[in-house]
Length: 394
Image (tube, rainbow, N blue to C red):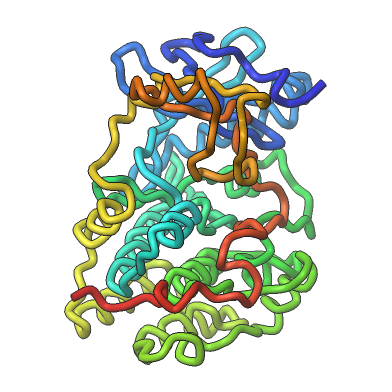
């Protein structure tokens, strides 16, 4: 039986939440767009029913909600509730009305737009602030959580239409701190964003997240994959060896001071990296001050408006026309957000301003899979066309 066949139907109610549609699937859980009783939209993460009989999996899922409930920061996606309804375990989380960085880069490529250095630095600075909060958080009894995200990547940093940055998906981090999960040497995360110590299966600390933020900053400012390879093994080998092309060798006029920040964050020896996300944030603040860049939501919101126009009505997703495979004339890969060409009567629905969607949900990344698909421009050593070379905002 396919995963789609096991998903919950639209309008299923779990506690105070009505599931509207399936938006993503992963090995452990599915994520739905949902509406709370008070009318607000939220994201509901529902544990895969096939795992409901797995006591350890259930414990890990509930632990994720428990740990996330201890976090409270503007740059972290909040959690409203963790509960069980019948045989369904679920987490109700904040809905971020925007796009993740992977989607943002794809939108920039389609629109032939460039991401200014100022915007990229503002995004990473906000993510660093959120991660610093998570790193320093203690449990109610005052014991440090020692929470390390371990999966910071383009797809796990969201940007809203108002310019707010949110780090999402602490699932791997919560599994690692759970007393029920002790598998030394197990490697989890995306190969291109792992720290060297993480790729080697060694103990990790908060500097692993600093390394991953360095990778994200590199890719946002160069438009190129930082650590590349034909396989996860080759990408992890590049990480361990610290093999990447310096940004100044890719983009003419790349700010040397920005390259120095990236180089420090990407140090193979963790003792030579920034000691914390707060230290990285401080370096970015110093860089921004020297370059007269703004580290708040304004430049981010400006890019979102440039790429997406005015923030669309989030409830527009509820006015949908589902397309069967036979109605699709042409489409990009199943993970694509690009418009598709359809035949009547679907075209009539489009004319009526209904939103057309493909019913197949997006797949969540698993294990050490690459964060960027084979068709996106940051894959491997390919760079974006010259027009996408990041530039300083006028």
